[in-house]
Picture 1 (cartoon, rainbow, N blue to C red):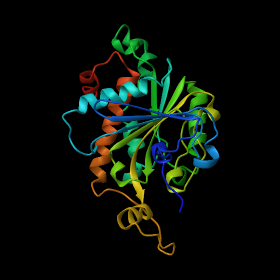
Picture 2: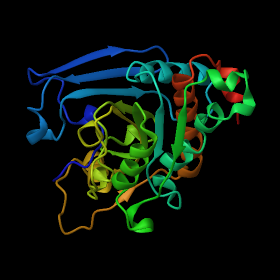
Picture 3: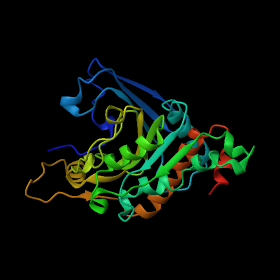
Picture 4: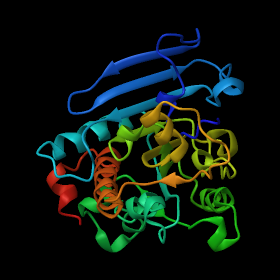
Length: 281
């Protein structure tokens, strides 16, 4: 049975790690696991290449938390380490008309875009001119546009010339407990749809020549995995497979995208406080 997951954490057994793989643990509000792969020796076996994979695990993101501000700040801190200085392009991947796949577009809509403000001479000495130049967009999926998302991003990046790209997408996982409770950040980019066997052209530094940081939250899980974890039995391959999502997916996507946007905004604009970012929306 093929494992359908976008989480690097689910691709390794902590008991038998290859020599090129290193795991570190940290975190205050989140339980953070950082997996560092030194080379591309794991690509053939598990599909994970050289890079850093940071997983933040916590409480369900669809619920209100008293630690919300600390969660946003810890997310921003982890993301900041991967970001170079200079202009940033933020891209929301996914289909905004399909709720489990709409985390990317909904997050991108909440990112504070500043490129047009810093270019406007009418703002003079206002604080807008001191902020990092950020552009944000969500281009839909190929079924809507007829264009590979990577081609759209490549064309926009060629025009804007950012120093790095942040892509946000909904992910698939194998552990039901990670649905809506986990955030993954990686500097290896992303292949949209790979977790649900609909792999599209990858968006990565290899293609664009600049760092590509991918952020995502698992919103779907393979039903084969659910059945096997609950019963321990082998899967009847004649049974149709499907992807399952939590019943409170509307609230999950709304609140998860808000938390992601808070973390991204704080990471991109370190001069702004949490209260400043909250006041923007």
